[in-house]
Amino acid sequence: MVAVAFGLCIFLLRRVAKSQGFKPDMISDLAFWSLLSGIVGGRIFYVLLNLDYFRDNPGEIVMLHHGGLVWYGGLLFGVVAAVVYSKINKLSILKILDLFVPYIALGQAIGRLGCFLNGCCYGKPVSWGVYFPSHNARLHPTQLYSFVNLLIIFLLLRWMQNRSKVKGGVVALYLILASLERFIVEFFRGDSPEFILGLTVFQVISLAIFILALYGNFLLYSRQRK
Image 1 (cartoon, rainbow, N blue to C red):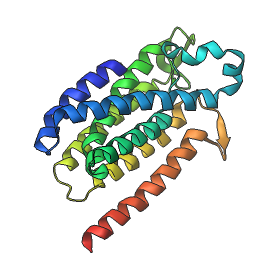
Image 2: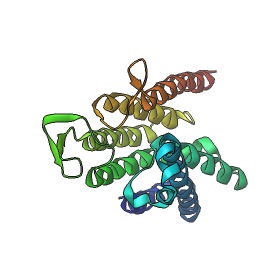
Image 3: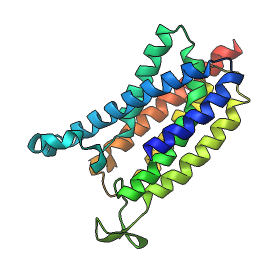
């Protein structure tokens, strides 16, 4: 599903990039390095969150087909790669991110289908839920909840992409919506233990990103008005 997401998003990005004044080949290169960095970052975060297990099973660190990527780790490393690439090639980082983020949401949505097929990122037990053989239980199909939510976010971002005149506005909206989506879906997930005040570590991270993105959005539009 990661491969499908990458192929589809690159195809769509290359078509949009030309109308935005970017060279399609440059977009492909940037997407490749961001994806590679994102996979590394997502795996590093997963290993850190499950350090006791990987300390006893170090060989599992490279077994990506067993599942285990943390989205926020992937997002952080992917954005860092995009910033470095943009600096080297003297591109506007906000303009680049505004171009990319709708397709990040789309790729994330397709990736959640992979989670559903793999049985990871699973939900809490519920009588009417989907039966997962690997868990021998009927669970909330939280992967499908996220798939639908992220698909809607993709459509909203594409709609805004053609209308926003504020650099970084699409990025800020993505962070607001994606963090809110993750915060809500976490209430139905069964693979994230409580961290503090009844919230999981991902809900705490989502809340922090949501607040920072709202503030960043306010700054962007204030600067635009001035």
